[in-house]
Length: 174
Image (tube, rainbow, N blue to C red; front, side, top):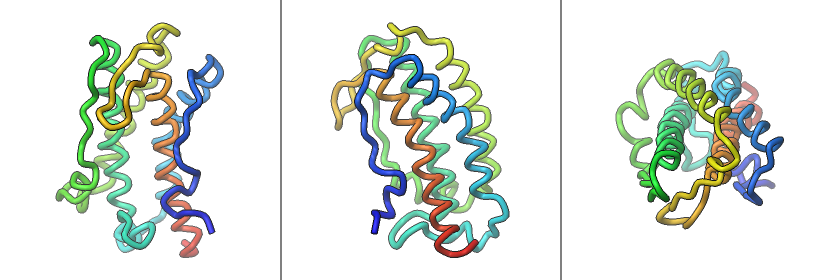
């Protein structure tokens, strides 16, 4: 049986990405809000309060986490484009998911954030040159990276959590 924490597999990176790979990753990011809405379609509040796995976040927390994480991604792209090798600040995602807005806010709030955020992020990503994608950043726990890596992370991240929702729906017959 596959690991329910990684329904599409763990993130791997063999960069840098070529132009076609970047275009495909940007397209995934552009489509993430729509794909998330499809995965959520028709779910009732009781279903949104269901953890996707034992010990995992609820569907509601997953949606709010995607918005939280992608806000951070947007800032990380912009910092890397405007500063010399910035150190990217991590955040305590598990604690963020337990805050009141992460456990109880209406999904529409995070979906609206994702619509606007992904539109802006897509516009930014389409504008970048090869040299800009090669700009370095440092992540305190995983080391030195560039924007190829960050693009790949977030092209994986949205589908990763959407797959949590779709796998739960399939398992429960929703």
